[in-house]
Length: 325
Image 1 (cartoon, rainbow, N blue to C red):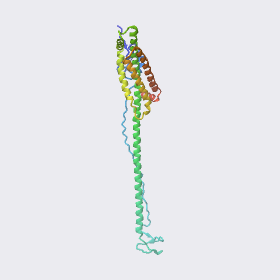
Image 2: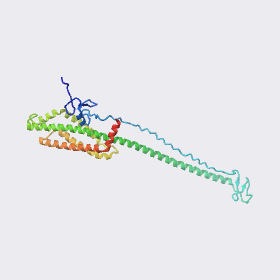
Image 3: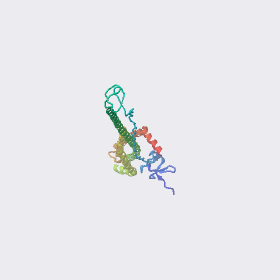
């Protein structure tokens, strides 16, 4: 008895030997060429088979800012050399005056109380030195506080800049994931819409698929039931990603143009989804709308894809991903 062949998840065709690949997470099987067309993203579980999970490196920035405020030991010792400290001198001629002497023996000038004068001069010098030291300590204290504040601000700015860079990289990674899921969903919707249009035409012109239009459409939906189920899953993923992408990270306001492109692609996708999942009108209207919405979706998707392929930041993300592997 001939072995039963595996069926490709993407095209629903049998897989010959040597053409089979599996999703590393859920083991769903595909043709190699179909899996390449899906960019190795599993239609069943959404696993990206090209990327390893990144380990988030949460670093606790426990930095003890030890600021050593070493003040110079300023040896401000005023060396007051007093020669002959036990002697007094005449203020007129400089002759040595002995204790108790009232008049200078050389010039005859009256001797004043020089001991009191010397103490007054010494006190003035001490007061000046004390004030000078206090002023210098005050200035050094102000400078020290200013330096500590500046260092704290620089460290805080560095931490904030690192957080903003991480948030920006996560946003760009989400854009790449959104673009991949958008492509898979678009391919799936095109298959559903074209099948509906085909059955509708065959019912009118070839009397196939039931007695009226409603039966023909229902027949198309029955034949594409698995694709319709996948379309609903993809729609949930796309809505979740778009909700996340609507909030640009702080410090990355320059990505507003990218958000506009994402928004345009999302709007054309929702129009295409409504057409494929909820057909209405007559055959001519449906055919025209199918062609228009398919083209609108492809145009907006290509604009997004071109942005990703030409922006150097996405190349940097790919390089970091390869390094982590």
